[in-house]
Length: 385
Image 1 (cartoon, helix red, strand yellow):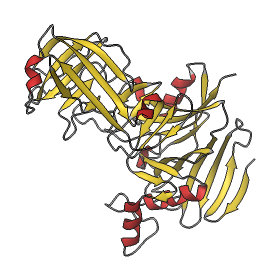
Image 2 (image 1 turned 135 degrees about the horizontal axis):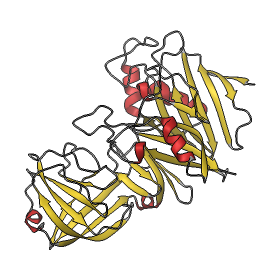
Image 3 (image 1 turned 180 degrees about the vertical axis):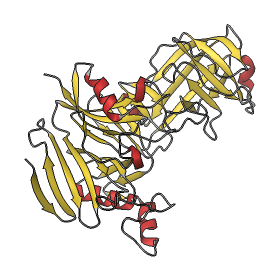
Image 4 (image 1 turned 90 degrees about the horizontal axis):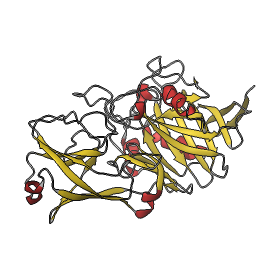
């Protein structure tokens, strides 16, 4: 049985009316254009419900369906996944062995797995249940001898401008690096998992010029760009000792239990991202359902996460299916989130990745006609009776 409620931009069809208290799931038929969205609203005041994230295959390298990640979480026994959607952006193709690598923040069960890159498009929940979406940055360094080397990335392919990357066992078995691009310092003695507020001594076990080093289970591999000129590099010799330090800023982000990063902040303090608004207003001719090489303006399947003082919103818009749902521009997505009541929101991966799962069933219609393997996922979970 469904209940249909009409509002300004369309109508809500309430799905799963007997769902767990504190959660509402509905299909939103947007009448301004032909678009179908699926929405989950979670009350922030219901103590049995929680926000969680999941990493595909429990490691960075590799991909997995949203449903498979939810099933694996359910096997944990303590909580069950009520709603799951796809997560953030990264390498979906092989990309020289880096398929599965995320390109923004992922903190899971208190473990810092990848650092923030689009620092404005991050969302986190602390141990006490506080929601965070302020701009967040990682401050990290590797101390060796009397020198300090800045650390730029964790468990990511070598991004532009990232001269030093740390690879932990969470990446996979080895670093997948190219021997011609840099040297690798194999370190041991770390306390794992890595957490957002971290300081621990380490020991240098080996220095390799060969690339693709095995990652020790009790340590990590420090990759240093061959072009980097720094006095500290000569100090990295087998047997040397140092200290690894990292933290997130602002400091409240160090208390985060689960966090995810997307690409582009949609809403801040109830207002649409100025860039999106300017692009929308500058468009000479708006054609409903039209796809474009400018992705912000193109009508595509979309996934977003939003919230206000009382509610968390997970939203998936179907697209690329003209007789059913054409998709949304990012400005339209932000506008609908405001219409639903969100004041803060970030954009997650879209296109064929957009997936909305309820109780182990994909209820939206992914544009690829089947559920796609993705990099990570977002869950609403409840205690298992």
